[in-house]
Image (tube, rainbow, N blue to C red; front, side, top):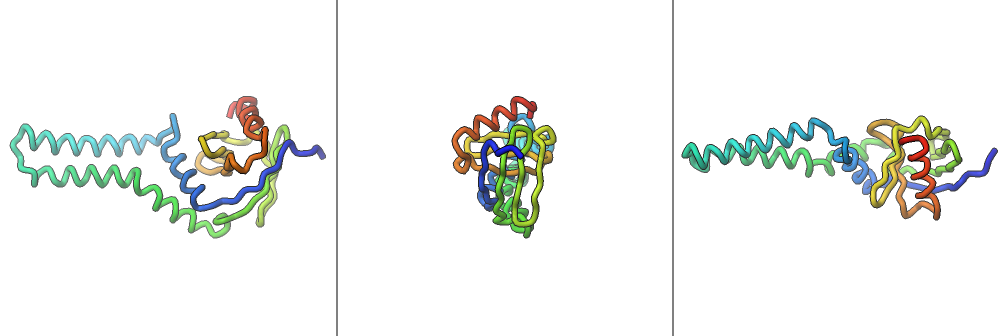
Length: 169
């Protein structure tokens, strides 16, 4: 068996999961269309309220509900994410605070954790996403493996970028 290019030890933490969840909700070029519709409806409610106040002579009481609804809608689409992520993280009894070891080879990587051991070929990944602090190895459209950049050995970031380019991930 070949020697791994590099290995890394990681741990799923609540903070990293929240960051991952936010990234999935608002990742570039893939913002969910439902979020766009939600923001559009909130903006429409707000504009209707302002229009009614300025041009139809409605009192501020009549525009109170559109403004409150728009504010609630924006909060539920953005500010509520952390609460949902924490609830989801804490509901996963197997993955909460799970420690794992990854060994990267030229064409695949091995995952070893407390409960499982598997080998995943790079061409089976849905993508490799890079943020300023993390790499996300997407095993499905909405789930993946979180790698903190600070945990990666020297040369690992370049290797992952090369894999992303080679397999068009």
